[in-house]
Structure formats: structure tokens, C-alpha cells
Length: 320
Length: 278
Image 1 (cartoon, chains in turn red, brown):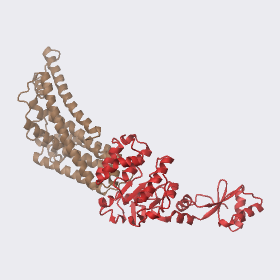
Image 2: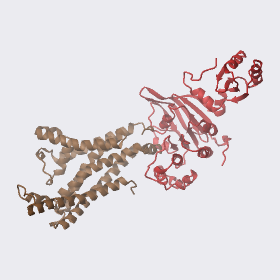
Image 3: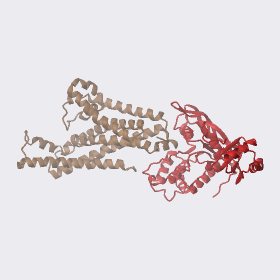
Image 4: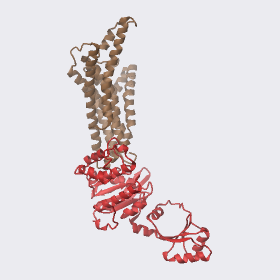
């Protein structure tokens, strides 16, 4: 199964989730601080942030599990605080820790959720077990499931109500690489079925491959948003230079007007116009420093994420 | 169909315990009587009348006092454990969070829990009472005790209804503590401490000074005693029985406690943020 990155044709533009100035304070700690976000049908939106950034609290408020201190969350135009049950009828959510009744089988757990959901949910139990690769183990008790199987069951439960919005909090936790790939494909399929998907994940590689838009939050505040291309373009391009005497090399490059230089274990990362590669190489060679490699690199989502979310006091030591 | 083992184990335990206790009482008292007759042990001061009276407790016509009393005493403890576990495990397993995330309402959750607890308490008292009746007939037959007029169905039913009623405040207390603490263990511990300690403290206080009855009669244990003893002879004599509250007032006090505990649980559940920790 392959997924297609040209998914724009699915996006119809209807907003399935909107938060307006969402705030949550736990005592003196502000976990979420005035968060505005939107998810539309047919798109996958990545919610990124370091541990404690407020991702799960945001999801909790969207699902009515946590009462916002201020602001609101609307699903399909329905305020979750005012019309919670009605709003959640259009949402399938998988929380960070997948929890089901341990003494029931996977199938019985799904059946229980289906009964709660009503509608045609019961008829979707077995097809969803098959879709998530759990048909063989559907009759086994939940407590015997591996972490990966629990995650799959959690994802299956999100689809019982044929939701317009799917919220997945770390869905690839505990999955092997093949399983992670299947989940990525499934997420793209969900968007292809004209559902909006909000994906909170630590796996930046996963987010980069599957998301149309990314929201980066830090200390509960939205600090960056846009498509992957927009976000990574902001990070710029750089050269990875493999060279022996890093201190001297850095001095030479600073003499050329290069301002951003960072030491790496094998050499230097140098932020400069991609067209200046030959110039940098010549300057180093003229000084008797022969670089083993000068590789132009574009910032990855991971680079940008690290840059955006690094602590205020820089942990990396810049080359002097 | 209830898939958990716990409710079935508890029903099995009350049936087993009823038969076992009836048998043990007969075996023990009968052994003492035989020993007195054989001269192995000296006869008690008042003769063997007291022992024979105890043996009469086994007879089917005494099920309302002895058998239902036995089910009531054991049942209170078992149902405190069950009520706390029935709610507390939902927090421990994280299933409360899962249910909410799938659109369940908090009110619906608590009402469903309370309704299933009421249903289970009803089933428990019915099964326990039937087990006590069965044990009474079985052991009477083995012991050669006259069944007399047999079981007084109306009296046993009244006793069973009262026994079921006195379960409720303790179950509501265990439920409320489990909701507040998000823990089955805390609900069980608090429920059992109140069940045992309050009764002991109340009896001690009234024994020291009967005026204290005015205070402790607003508690659970004295109200439970008053309801239990209303219109029936007690299986076990209580020296402080004369200071017990009016049974009607006691029944109302128990009902008010049930409401208070349930409202406290409801209020906490409604306002609680449900995070990964529960």
C-alpha cells in the first residue's frame, strides 16, 4: 500500500475543529496559553512540542476531559463545553495511554465502545479489527495485548463512529517500523476519506511524512505553524563541513562574513548561502585546511523543531 | 452477562460462608453438648439450655434473625469492597478517561455505576438469603433439629429488605471515596474503617454515658442497628439497645447519608479534570 503526498484534492475546507484562545492553568502553571488552532476536513495537522508543552492538555480540552480556564473548543461548530456529547459524536480520539478493560477481549472492548456510540458502530467492529490487523487476536483478552496491539485497538476505536475528526495522541508508540509505516498510511487514508486528523507525535520523521500542516507549541503557546515546507524554509539551509581543526576553520569562515557557525563532532555546521560552497572550500584550502566533505543541507523539521523549542539558555556551544 | 470474576466470587463466597457457618455452629455446639453429656467437660452454670438455645438458631424458623443477620454482616463488608472496586478500577485502568473520550457523559457514568451497584446489592441479598435458608434446612436435617413451622417468608423478606437497605449508605460512602481519591483501595479502606470503627466508638461512648446517644444516633452504625432491630428480636443482645434512635428517623438518616455521599461523588466527578493520571 502506498500513500500519495499530493492530497490537496481532498481538502474541502470545512473546519472540523477550531479552538479560540484556549487557556488552561493548573494553579500557578499555565499549561496552555491562548491557543488558536484549526483542523479542516481532508488534512492532517501535526501538533508538535516538547514534553510538557501542552499537547495532551490541549487534546483533553478539545475532548471535554479538562475544563479550559478560558477560551473554547468547537467541533463541527459545536462548543465542547456546552454541547459535549453532541460535539464528540463527530470525533474519534485515541489518547496517549490506550486504556481498555483488561478482562475483556479486544472485540468486546470495541463492542462496548460501539454500543456507547450507537448508530452503525456495531457493524464496524469486525471490519475495523481486520483493518488494523487484529482480526486474529480480536478474541484475546486486552491484558494479553502487546503495546503495539493496544495502540492498534485504540486507533480502531477512534473509527467506530465514522468520525469527521480523528485525534491521535502518539499513535505510533510501541509500534515497530513496519507498524509505524502502516499507521502513517492509515492516517493518510483517513485524510483521503475527507476526515480531519489532529496528530500529536514526538516522531518528527512521522509528522514530516504524513502531515499537511504543523503546529509547534512551547509552554502552551503556539510558536510556529504552517506547511512542512513553510516551516522548514524558515530554518534555512546550511553546509555540513567535515574538517579537522574546527576552531581555526571557524575563524577563517568568520573572516568571510559567515555569522552562524556551530561545532559538531566531525566539523562545523555553517549557515550560508548555498551558492557560497566553492568560496568556503577555497578559503579553507588556502589556509591549509582541507575539508573531507562540504555538504549542502536543508533544515529538516527536526532541525527547526529543535531550534524553536530549545531552552532559553543555549545548550550547544557556538564555535568562537 | 457480567464478565468480571469479582461479582461471581462474592456471590459464591456468601453461599459457601452461609453453609459453612451454619455447619460450624452446629458442629461446635453439638460437640459441647455431647461433651457435657459424657462428663468430659463440666456443665455450664445455667445448664445446657443456653447451648440448646444457640442450636435452635439453626432452625429454619430463625432464618430472619440469624441467617439474614449473617448475610447482612458479611454483606456489608463485601459490598463496601465491591462498590469501591466497581468505581475505583475505572480510574486505575484509565477506562473512565477512555469512555469520556468516546462521548460518554459523566452523569451517565455515575448513574450507571450506582444503578448497577443497586442491582448487585439486590441480587446479593436474594442469593445470600436463599443460601441461608438452604443452609438452615440442610444442617437442620443433618442435625435432626425440628424445622418447626419452617421459614416465615414474610418475616424473612422484611429482614432481607432491611439488610439490603443498610448496605446502601456504606456502598455510597465507598463509591464517594473511590471517586474522590480515584482509587479502589482508598474507597475500601475508608468504607471498612467507618463500618467497624464508628460502631465501636459509638457503642463505647453510649456505654460510658447514655447522653452521648443523642450525638452518635445521627451516625451510620446506630441508625443501622435501629433499622435492623425494628420489629424483630435481635439475634445478638445489645446492652445499649434502649438508647437506639426511632427506626423511622434512623431510616431517614440513612437515606440522607446515601444522598449526601452520592451528591459529593457527583459533584467531584462533574468538576474533575481527567488527565492521563486518571
